Length: 110
Length: 120
Image (cartoon, rainbow over all chains, first blue to last red; front, side):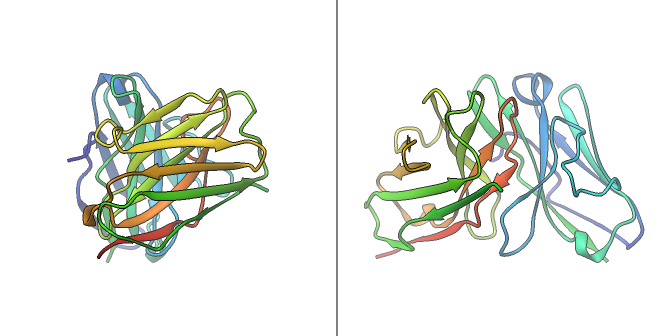
């Protein structure tokens, strides 16, 4: 069981918006930054969001992140079939003194 | 250009020790704040963080696996080595090394991963 909680799966139609949630506690999300990664079959995870809401260069602005208290969300608007994949949140956990990941959310673009 | 590449055995037997090497370029692990870590992914399952080493040689381990893990670095070779003892079938998966940049707490660059299968 993962320390950070994500919905196992979500689906939406092309062009729609999806919100992926990530729930934690004070020791991780509550007091540390959140990052988000996209995992596609056969490829290494790709950083989408760092420090809660910042996008690395090359990540389109239809992908955004936010954090409130002990929860974080990843929003993807204008969904494309290429957005299908697994999405993971992560944060440093000060109590565990290590990185914790969410269980991942499988996004299907219908 | 930052690159990381994992290397190691594709197949290990139960109870054996796994040794993986992460060879990197484009940055120095001696730079203040820089870290390299290991993350694994069993087939069909979620990412799991394993270990981290920082520029000062401080090490951090997954609580559930710390008795089996050792992470070290060889700055002369720009390599980070992870050993995991007493391998079992549940340890089968893809193992990634990844960089945490200075003043960051996220993995910005990842290796392509190496698949390790534990089987007799």
